[in-house]
View 1 (cartoon, rainbow, N blue to C red):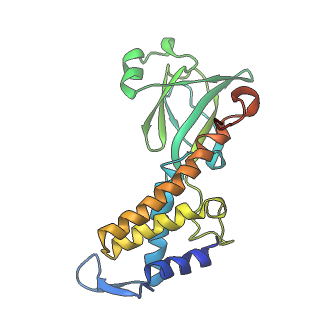
View 2 (cartoon, rainbow, N blue to C red; view 1 turned 120 degrees about the vertical axis):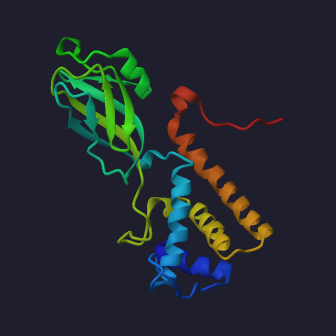
View 3 (tube, rainbow, N blue to C red; view 1 turned 90 degrees about the vertical axis):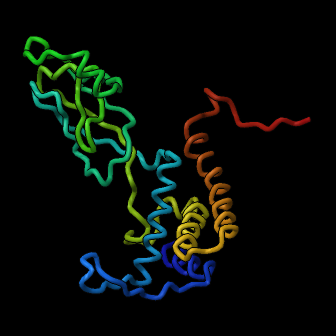
Length: 232
């Protein structure tokens, strides 16, 4: 399903063209207009974010490399915060060998490596997410080591995609459609039973999406065996 079809389908299901709305602006001294596109695009983006935070598709995994600074325990991620969602793994590269760091709490790293003297520096073994774009490492790096980060990111929304298409809407359009209907009908202050029905259809679609993202794409027939149904 492309953007144009999704847009019109939302209007059709909800029997609402969402005409432009004029209201007070944030300062309260003037007015601002919320266009039809802005309203429906908001429903779609809210649905997409809900989906991306409910299932992990390998299609939405990226990797990036960077390096730390010797004597500095903090490592800045070379990823924009609005794109970064979660960490899959963080590895330090020493003599062309990857050593994967273990994820710990910030407090654990501070307690395990309380000394700041250079004699306590070394190859980092642990990391923690300190804030939205910074890791804390333990022990403090003794050199400017290279790192590789694998992370889960927010893909481009179909509302701004130049092609009018995304992987999610090409493969699981029902999740985006029903997720958008839930958001749109809630915005309309619709009847609770109708919202519940849209949400039920969304959850049914998400079962299929999670079956792929959290199940089928994380197994193979050699190690896990083929999927089979019990026959009586």
